[in-house]
Image (tube, rainbow, N blue to C red; front, side):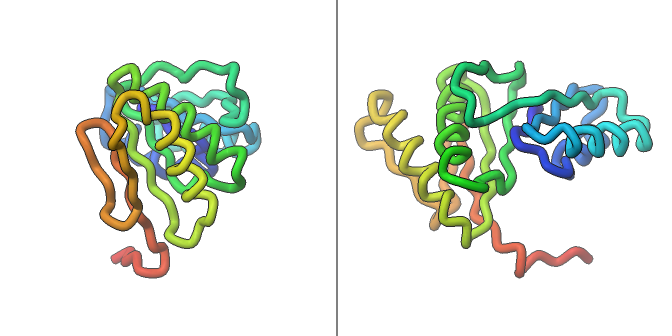
Length: 153
């Protein structure tokens, strides 16, 4: 599993703890965030967790190797949303799974969907994405998130 734009890394840390010995890669452009994730992983003895600097706005990069890519509320601006669409398309083109979680009020998530739709039009001329229905197909899952309605009990 590879988390793109991990920030504090909660999905990565959870996956590493629950899926040993599966390898988990946490990526982010912020080295400080990656240090915090690495320290948290060390504190929890998660030897299957690694970190890597990765800039979603850099189209010259290639994705770290994984079977599942997770993007959790990474749409900070339109450049990141477009980059996330490009890397999502790259992963899907290689037959990899991509799960994308986005807070309902993030305007840039529409930029992501628009860009991904353009990138995928050649594979499927009738391809249509929507956050409204929690779009899911064989490889791609778009999950609409409302953090105000999450129960932590």
